[in-house]
Amino acid sequence: MAGRPSSRRSLGVWMNGELVGTWTFATAAGHSFSYAPSWLTHPQGRSLSLSLPIAQGPAPFTGHIVEAWFDNLLPDSPGIRKRLASKFGAESTHAFQLLEKIGRDCVGAIQLLPSDSPPPDVRRVDAEPLGEAQIERILDDAVSNRSIGVPIEDELRISIAGAQEKTALLRHGDQWCRPRGATPTTHILKLPMGEVGGMRADFSTSVENEWLCAQLLRGYGLPVADCSIATFGRHKVLVVTRFDRGFLDGWWARLPQEDFCQAMGLPPERKYEEHGGPGISTILDTLRGSEHAEADRRNFLAAQLLFWMLAAPDGHAKNFSLFSGPRGRYRATPLYDVMSAWPAIGKGVRQFQWQKVKLAMALHAKNAHYRIAEIQRRHWNEVARANALGTDFEAVIGQVVGMTPAVIESAAALLPAGFPAAVSERIFAGLKAQAIRLDAGA
Image 1 (tube, rainbow, N blue to C red):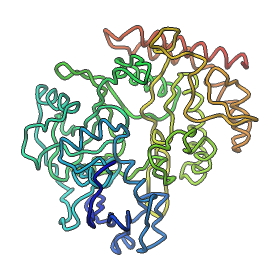
Image 2 (cartoon, rainbow, N blue to C red):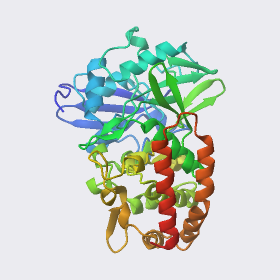
Image 3 (tube, helix red, strand yellow):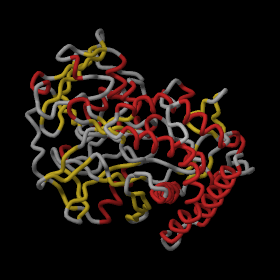
Image 4 (tube, rainbow, N blue to C red):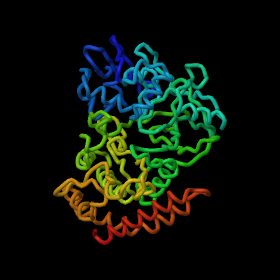
């Protein structure tokens, strides 16, 4: 990334109108973050991250761990970062320079504001109602370098991590709105992914795919982000309700959370276990400290099992997150960003070969097993035993197998008119086949 800042700069890190601390970058010294004295004694004071514990007090954190935490607030895609830098006049795609421009509405609870900014007025809702044509235009601009044609202080300066095109809006009083000032967004609007990877696999139905995966996961009893399919003009989008937002006494609060790359102090390029990211055991160990440790650990491994059944290859560290509470408390968030590869698996030129489809996190038995086709029932039990989930997980496996026909039937009943059969039929067939494999012990 070219064009790093040439002088010392600082951003205030705010959480619901309270100053948490200061993030500073200087060419010679690099990145640092320190908690504000007022935050250290605040009743709602908490760690910004498990990797940046508040117990350290006012002494600054320095180096890559700080840069990594903030870098994870941004989109993964270099192309999307370049468009954001061009649209908002950032000097480069470096995290500090981008977040100087778009850090007022991030994932989780923080706002990044100039160091001399007054406290943001978060306890009022300031928003501009939007019609369908205006939302269509915002979606047009999500994939372009153009500014959205409104005064600069009202532009949608938001930062949403991930690898696909998306934007976010406020839903307030049954009305879509563009938030202004310190008012947050409440819903993420995700556009179709199009062609993916070097083979240009067709994921133009990613909206329907992700929606269906969410319904299936919910059918199995796992917590998952609420979502729906909507159309604004020429754009079909997945509308995801943000679980890091909550309506409190007439105002929209930002709820603290972080993904597992942030919690582990890792940059986003290490989100996959094969690239040095956390695996199943690391996350299960972290969840031992959760307020809901037993349920969170069971649900996490059950999610990995269902990713195997769904052929969902992107269950990496950035797609699992934690809610952060005061006094070191934390717990798992709902699941999100789950998509099945079944519609793109086949023998065609632009399809994934079944034998090569992998999970993002391996099952470590005697060897590391990533490939979905190679993983067997005994591997799940070996991983459960190695991580102190014991024979209880055998009951989970049996429950998942037994529930599958009814879960598929319920999801099929929810399919809206015109839902692409190439998505639903392939996912349902793949799910059934994996349940049969699991039941047979294969």
